[in-house]
Amino acid sequence: MKFITLKYNRGLNYLLKNERDEKMAVNIINGLIVFGVVTILIGIFVNALILMLVTKMFKLSFKLSDTSYKRALWVTGIAGVINYLISLLGGGFMQGLGTIIMFVLTWIVVGVLINLWLIKFKYQLEWSKAALVWLVYLIFSMVVGFVLSLIYIAVGVIVLGAAGGALG
Image (cartoon, helix red, strand yellow):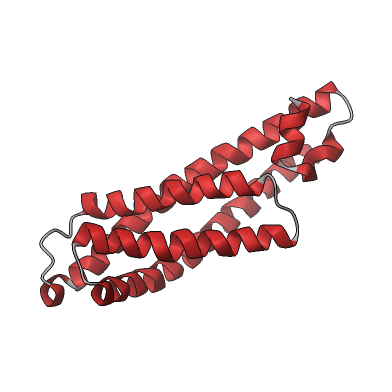
C-alpha cells in the first residue's frame, strides 16, 4: 500500500512515518479522489446545461435539429470522463513543471480537440460552425466556472473555519 500511495502523490510521503500515518495518507488520497469525482460530475451536468443553451442560441442559424440536454450531456460526459482519467493517470507521476505541462496537454487534448470533435460529430456541423459553437461554449463555461470556483472557495473557508473553531 505504501508503494501505491507514494506513486500516486509523492507529496504525501512525509505522512508515512508509521502505519497510522499511512492509513491517514490513504484516507486523504481517497477523499481527494471522491472530491474529484464529485467535482467532475457537477462539471459535466453544469457544462451540459451551458452547451444546451449555446446550441439553442445557434439552433436557427445552423439548422440544428436536436439541441436537447441529453445530447449535450453525452458530449460533456465523454469529455469529462476523458479529462478525469488523463488527470488521474498523469497526476500521480508528475511534479513541478511536469504538472503544468500535463495540465496544458490535458486542456489542449480534452478542452479543445475532443470537445470540438464531439460537438462536430454529435451536432453534425461543419468544422467552422462547430468551432464557433465550441468558442461560445468555452467562454460561457469559463464565466460559470469562475463563479462556481468562488462558491467552492467560500464553502471551503466556511468549513475550515468551522473545523478550526471546533478544534480550538
